Length: 224
Length: 224
DNA sequence: GTTGCATGGTGCAAAGATGCACTACATGGA
DNA sequence: TCCATGTAGTGCATCTTTGCACCATGCAAC
Image (cartoon, rainbow over all chains, first blue to last red; front, side, top):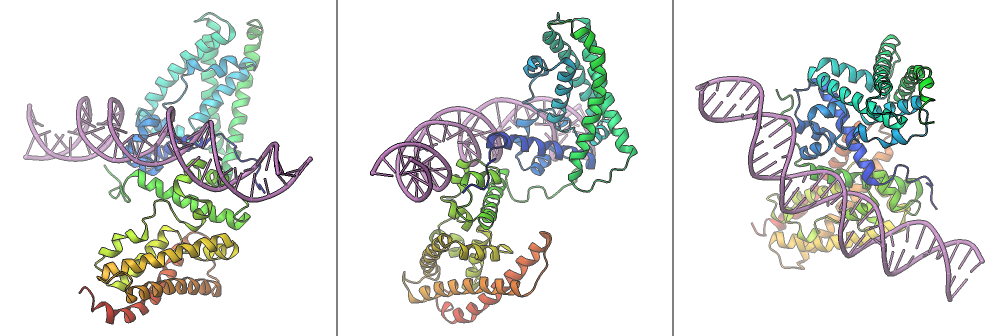
């Protein structure tokens, strides 16, 4: 009678719809910025391309810039990320997961990474905002690591770890872009996206593996 | 500054969204019926395929069957169709326009016609409902023609004209299906859809041309 | 038959999207 | 300088979608 047993894959229609709208707005924001520059299109046009009203756009993003960067209004503030704090994983893994989760939210996991970096370098406004965001994230992450590991706020290890994660993140992204640039990887369909994402994830994991060796002496002393 | 001058093509986001949802629901309803039969899928699955909730489906269609037939809840009852009554066009043209408008609403203008006829003949429930609908439409149309032409309700000419239109409609659809069946028209992409629609429209116009000759002696006597 | 279960269909209150009016600001003439 | 215009962003009332509880029906197991 039922030809489909696995119907409800990702929860309710409300959430699926929201994700789809976020995806559409971010993707079109980047496409339009690449094609016309950040000042070359209006929010009105972006909203229309994504199939929502102008007003709805501002329910999803505080500013036009944020749409390009993938900074959602419903983002959990990093300093409230209980998932990371409560994760049973070892610290390096938890950090890697957090990083990947962030990239998923901003839609910069696969081929988008290269596009994203392009945009950052072509629009100074975006770069500026991104640096603000990263600064804030570094601070929040330090506090988060301290909480997770049972350290005092401002503990040097937490600060160093947070900085190191930033470094790993940046390194991973650059490394990925360089490698993609080096080997053609003639992509025609979106079928390539999955493979691209896998390549990127592999690079991230390779880089975060460094963290394992550097962190373990310290982390085994804390909270365990 | 603006790279796009023709932004607002079809009004607000609300209407565009509604049309898209109707289109998705009808198309998926037909696809699922073709693949699994009318009883082979649930409203839940149909709604999910179209990206809306089950409850929303019932905001768009009274019943599952109606979705396949393209009978919307917000359809203007035919006997309230002021567009037709107030149209300045000659009667045969107005009738043809009304017919094409109806087909647009039910999404059976192009390649869908053949699919639609297939479904009608494969599911007796659909055929039954369709005949009900057509019966009602014939009655309403007769009343509408009478109003438009300033005739008394039940005027024989109005009744005959309504019946004739039903005949022209049926003839057009069958003729189209036969011709498509005869010539391969290897369609691969949706690029063919536009051409298919044009072929169908041409057939409709050819058939309604008969109405011109038959109606004009009478209509020139009325209301003019 | 009757008990359970899947599905069709509806009422209702909460959440989300939209239209509209409004402010702020930047830019480019008179 | 001052004004007109275009666009970013926000407050608010209204409309739409959604989740959920609910009932009716048909069908299969017992």
